[in-house]
Amino acid sequence: MKKVALFAVLFSMMTISAKAQWFDFSQNMSDVTIGFNAGVVGYHLGNGQIDKTYADFGWGVSFSIIGVYADFIYQCPEHKFGNKISPDTYNDHTALTINLGYKIPVTRWLNITPLIGYSNETTGVTDCSTINVDYESHSTYHDYKRETIDNHFNYGAGISLKPIKWLEIGGVCTAHAVYGNISVNLLKSPFHK
Image (cartoon, rainbow, N blue to C red):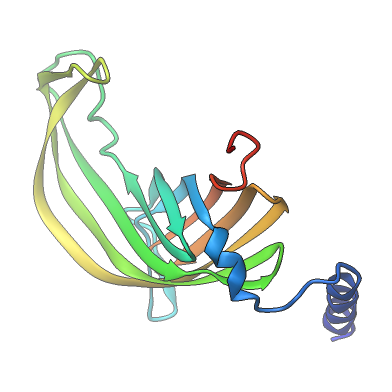
């Protein structure tokens, strides 16, 4: 209990010394960010347990305009991007999460973002006897045939810190994904004129 009280006192002293204004929503008016997400997607929180059957690494993007935040993170089938043809088939899965929220500026350097969204996991078969070419990305991939899809309502929260006025570093934790984020504010970037 003493640690919690000490943390609360130190946190309040830090915000007072920074002369930060709490909940200044006018900050969101100069907020246009784009970012990159990476983390774990595809697990389930429920009934006091975590189901990690489909949990794996995923990546995605995020953006925000005037405080309205949106992101997605996606996990590809493990064997889809092979470059060798073989008669093998693999039982694979995918996971996707799409979130929407609004940034609440607690201070000039701290935002909290309540999120709601959509999540799904698919199971299927990756057929390594097929090979396709994506001419735009110059990559090869095998066919993934989806067999089942599980759809979910997603909810959670994000937190972001602004160590520099044009850079945000944060994290998101939802019922189906946990990931980090790094974003650039396009209107406050040193490259913006």
